[in-house]
Amino acid sequence: MVSRTVLLDAGPLGMATNPNRSPSNLACTRWLQELIAAGIRVLVPEIADYEVRRELLRAKKSRGVAKLDALASSVGYLPLTTAAVRKAAELWAEARQQGHPTASDQSLDADVLLAGQALTLGSEVVIATTNVGHLSRFVAAEEWHVIRVV
Image (cartoon, rainbow, N blue to C red):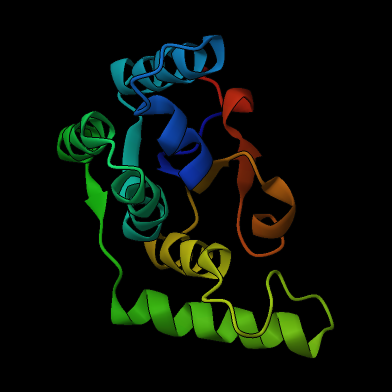
């Protein structure tokens, strides 16, 4: 069953906005279109946008940036908030206290920031990702292709 809100992690966000029409990118784009057509709320989290955008800018891929902007405008954008960042800090500290960090101590750790964003939205949220391992420790997360319209 698909949750009411799907947040796109950097993996599927990058695939869905990549101008390269590879089979995996096309499959991800079709999947995203199915969710939207079914009325599933899909959001682009600011931290995932940052992860994808920084690489597009570095590589001077203006078409990719334009597609990223268009997707965020069409489905919705979830900005980082104080509540999300504070929740992420709690998750970061707890993971280290338990001996299970998701990134190095010097890393910004986008996974806990994304989890913090998801947790501020409530219980009917799933993160569509290519990295279930780290995220599922904090919040509902599934490989993007597993999330289906029922």
